[in-house]
Image 1 (cartoon, rainbow, N blue to C red):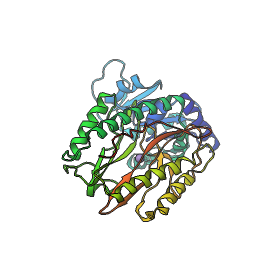
Image 2 (tube, protein in one colour):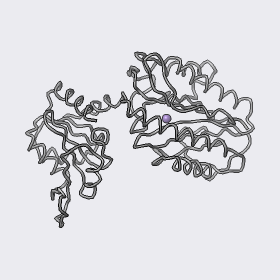
Image 3 (cartoon, helix red, strand yellow):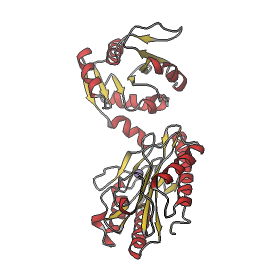
Image 4 (cartoon, rainbow, N blue to C red):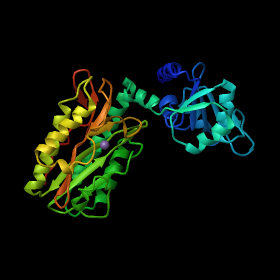
Length: 363
Ligand SMILES: [Mn+2]
């Protein structure tokens, strides 16, 4: 984590900035889930700013020594509490003044805080969200280990969902049982509301889970994720209950499209080439108009990170990236199918972090 700060400092130096305010990347840079802003000066130690009620947690979680808490009102303090009776933006302004920062980069977000900060400390502020996002693209070994654990829990959840796919069960019942199983297996929570989309819900790519019961003749899209030490996973399988021929074809094409994308993974390859391979497979089957999203995305502390696997992407794959590959086809009145795995890009190709859960796809 100190290395992340070092690399960020190099980027600041290159751009002639004195300091960087990270609002969206506090956990990545400091290790603290608690924490509002981290100030990284180009020379000197980072300062982590949090609310008073997060102070003890931030101290426990972070390697950063300089932790300062704010409180909007004056209150009696316990011994050892380092609390400034300031608004958050005032405390940030004080820190920047103390550092003599005249050129400050920041990672976006919190418009209100930035507006007030501009009024409280005069400096040139530059919004540079890509600075930390670029660093986050490549995962360290420790991060890969956590993502592997997270993916393993997701795979276990998917195994549970696979067992429960039966006509008569509701989408919500399936989601509840699966989430319970993942919690038991060590997940800190779902990074997004779990999707169980059956029948007419299956062709809505962003459906969640409803009281609707599964029926024969339906496709069921299950998209879920787990969280381990903050690192999330993302995996999708599509199940079929007494499917029609057309539904089976849909499933086969989507799996083939994923294989086509995966065949293009290696360090140095363009991300959009993976997407194009999946898109071409789907187009050849006559379904081009039914694939409205990208073919995948990076995963880390957030469920959608760089690289992006879309036709407009300029990302180049590198060793150490962790990403999902998830083509989908959604045909109204027929069904929706999506197939998603998480992979680690290696020098020559990739390693899958989610296991297959191939048995019992069709009932
Ligand atoms: Mn995904």
